[in-house]
Amino acid sequence: MAREQDDILRRGIGMTSQRTRERLIQRLYEEGLSNAQVLEVIRRTPRHLFVDEALAHRAYEDTALPIGHNQTISQPYMVARMSELLLEAGPLDKVLEIGTGSGYQTAVLSQLVERVFSVERIKVLQDRAKERLVELNTRNVVFRWGDGWEGWPALAPYNGIIVTAVATDVPQALLDQLAPGGRLVIPVGSGEVQQLMLIIREEQGFSRRVLGGVRFVPLLHGPLA
Image 1 (spheres, rainbow, N blue to C red):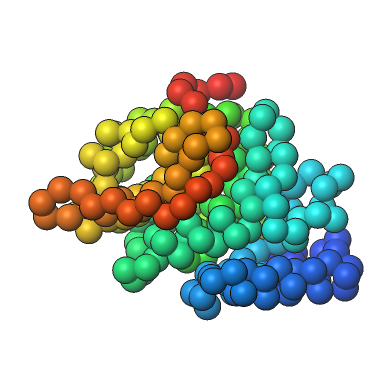
Image 2: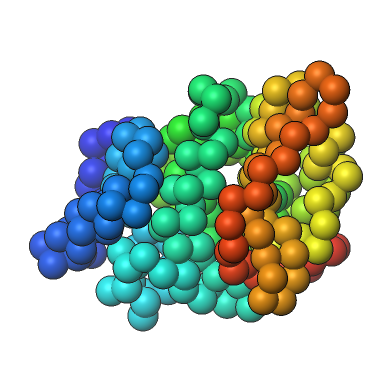
């Protein structure tokens, strides 16, 4: 897989883009991201495959980009930060992702954990993400088209849950599907007031850490064809 991914990583980008990729990793490190495994996965994952061709020249900027349907591909810093938070306590074997979107965060997670279960409400985005991950020869991701507020109860519990859109409050269904010791990384709030939270399921309940302000598209209800 490594050789195939190296070929894909280089395809369609020149040395300028390669240097931009390396500068991105350096910037993430300088901004406080220190998990070497996460940074290497961000470096290796071809973000240009997950954006429209017209925006491919901006793929390695540390910024969110539109992917259609009022959705965005998250900035690399946030993808790396949320991935680091999931892995803070050690390796995970079963992670639920709410909001497949472009599939970029999914691709990153697939290289960091044993299995990824990803839920997306917008069918056309899910289909595109599947195609991209097939091109990357990713084989440890399972997809579900549905309402992210409900999670994926049939396959619960999960060691980690990551939510890539802001919820007005923490969905009870996701708390219920978190395994003991499991970690939920989720943006919570509305409009201009959003906070990234880390929630851990402990013996006596849930602990919560507020990690600072963020900006995400809203987590909406119901599947959409």
